Amino acid sequence: MKSVINESELHHRYKTEIVATMENEPYAQFLGIRLVDIEEGTALAELDIQDHMLNAHETVHGAITFAIADYVFAAASNSYGKTAVGISTTMNYMAAGEKGAQLRATAIEEKKNHRMAWYKVNVESDGVLIATMEAVAYRKNHYFVPVEE
Image (cartoon, rainbow, N blue to C red; front, side):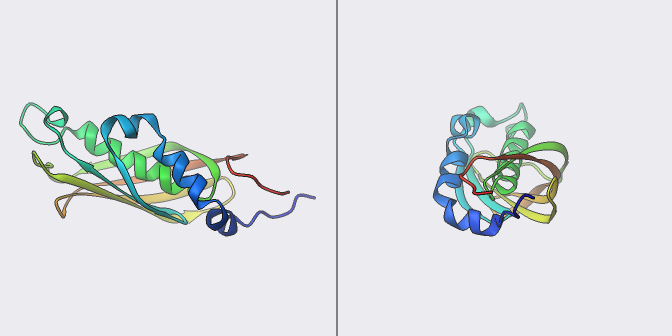
C-alpha cells in the first residue's frame, strides 16, 4: 500500500527547487515575467510592459495578459512539487492594460484533490483589474522534487 505524501511538507522542504523550476520557464524568461512569490497553491508574478507587447491600439496585447495569467496558474498548480498541467482555462478581459504599465497576476487555488485542481487568477495593470481567469489543472503521478513513498 502506498503511503500518503504530505504535499504541504514537500512545498516547504523543496520550495527553493520549486521556485527555481518555475523561474527557469523559458517562455516566461523570454517575456520578462518575474515570479514574486509562490506558496502552497498560490503564486504572484509581475511583468513590465514593453512596446513590442502592445497591439495595434497601443494597449497590452491580450496574448501578453493571457501569458502572465497562465504563468501564475502553472506556478500555483506546481507549487507542491507535483507535476501539474493545464487542461482548461477561461479568460475574461475587462479592460486594456496600458502602454508602460506593470502587469501583476495572482493565482489562488480554490480546491484540489489527487488528480485535479481549480484556480482563480486575477491580472491587474497598475492596480486596476483588467482580466480574470478560471483554470483547471490535471495533476500527474510524477513529482519533480524528491519524494519518499
